[in-house]
Structure formats: structure tokens, C-alpha cells
Image 1 (cartoon, rainbow, N blue to C red):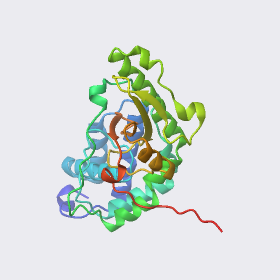
Image 2 (image 1 turned 135 degrees about the vertical axis):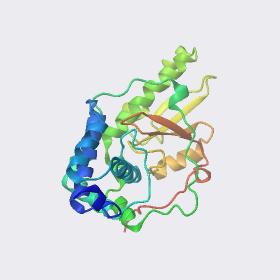
Image 3 (image 1 turned 90 degrees about the horizontal axis):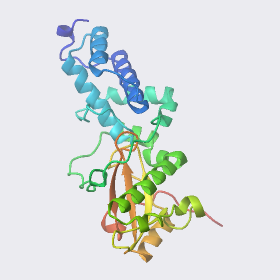
Image 4 (image 1 turned 180 degrees about the vertical axis):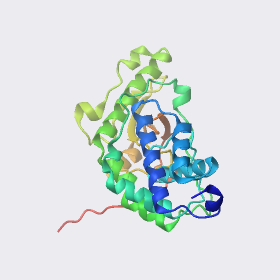
Length: 277
């Protein structure tokens, strides 16, 4: 159908399925380090469905926005943009349901350590009022729960911890504290989970720093689980304990920190209960 006829008309399911599939083909290439050219993908798609470049680019940004809510990486250059057409949620649902392996996509190798001035960023600011997500998107987030997905992805968690261990050693060496860098300890790997933190490190002044690492391939706003043990340990050791929230891990890892009291820094809500007799 010519574009002049399609202008002002909503995207059809077949068009949405094509652009979602093409978007994920580019995303997989991005994560695996393969070369791809976005403009060529857009041109080929425009030829198939008869939409303008502007329309295709905007829909790409819509897809990025949905993936951002799902705690998934999105293609750099397609900055998330709202104003969704509800049908995009169904198209993404169809693709992810048919291609569950996409959740296991990860880089071939970890990116090299950036300078610490770049990797450590400020925590996200509270969302402005009126920022409620559409009900259909909310149901999609529940179906492909990013919090549960990250929590169960042990390889992601271990990779994030290894990244922070190396980063802490690098940070201390750059601060002329090679003596302390040698003492950084990956507690979770050496002693197992349950200590209430993952890594034992230090400030440049030598003060103990007990780090709980929370890793996601999603954005800074992706929620995460905190165990009762971690919460209680944070209360007991508020001067030493902190969360390193590693985000955008699959593309350009960034970290913000959260120090106790946790209830003053994040919104805490009960997700599970322990049942006993």
C-alpha cells in the first residue's frame, strides 16, 4: 500500500511483526558484536511495508521504550520514546513468546573496563507523577517479569559480580592503593551466598566496603530483589554495606550505588511470603 494511503492509519499486525523481528535481528547483532547498518535495515523495511523513514524510526523508538520497561537492552541510537500504539505490545509479546532464547542473548565478551569516572553514575530520579504505564504494557511486564528473570539468571549475576571485582581492583590501583587491591575478595564465589554481601573491598582511605551486586541488562530503573538477609545486614552495617546496581550490562555497563537506610532510597514492597505449618 503506498505511503500516501497509509498516512494517518495505524500499523497492521503484519507490519508490526516485521519491524519487531527486524529490530531484534539488529539487537542480536549489537550484543554479539556483529556489524550491521541501521539505515539499510530501515530502507529494506520501508520498501516492504510502504512506511516513511520517520514512521519507521519512531516505531523503532517505541520498541526500545517497551524493552526498557521489560528490563532488556535496546539498540543505541533508538532512544526510547513513548506514545505507544497498543498493538505494539501484542507484536512484542508474540515475538518474545515464540523466541524465548532472546532472553539468553549476551555479548561474546565483556567490554573492557571504562574509567571509573564514566562507569559510576548518579542513581535515577523519582518518576514524575502521571507516568503510569498503559495496562497492556503492565501485563506484558508481568508476563516477562524482569525482576524474576534477572534473579534467576545466575550467569548474569556471576558475570556482574566478576565485573565489579575487577573494577574494584582497577579503581584501587588507579588510586595508588595496590596494597588494598590485592585484598579485594569475591566473598560470594569463595564462601557461597548468604554472607549478606558479594564482595569485600575498600575505600581509598582503607575503610571496609561490603558490596552487594545487583546486575541487569536493562536500564537504571529496572527493579530488583533484595533478600531479607541483605536487608538485615544493611541495617547492621550501614557504614560499610552498599549496593552496586550494575545496569546496561550487555552494552555499556554503568553503576550507581545505594547505601542504607534502604527504605529512604528505594520503594520497598513485599513480593513473596514464606509459608510454614
